[in-house]
Image (cartoon, rainbow, N blue to C red; front, side, top):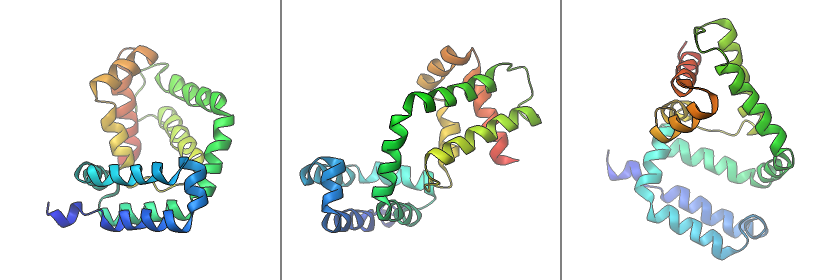
Length: 179
């Protein structure tokens, strides 16, 4: 990949513009302009890593930047939604946990079955609803699926839902998005 493909200048410009136009929001949600400046500096310092993840999740820096600009344009709305969700955090975590318990309750079931795919659909819709249809990028679910092969994630997931749960969840999600 060329250096141009890792160039986050337009994204950083969008952050700077957001800071200057939405100063009250920056202070309200980051605590201070200085904290937001630290965030911008962290993006700059980790440009290559941020860019790689952006490309992996969104397909290109341009798509990532457009999605982030859209999120910045609706930032207050997204933050208020997030705060509202935090009020019901325990309930939402329980619903999420219930869905994954249901998915992994009998891992002998074929992940391609209508029943299992119906549960996966509920999981996907639950996330969509809790994120206000925020653009997560075309590669988001691929990253989630890949995450289930991470050794640390496997240990936690398998401990919580049963041995082999991480692989089972990954296969069920993979089938859902590739069918």
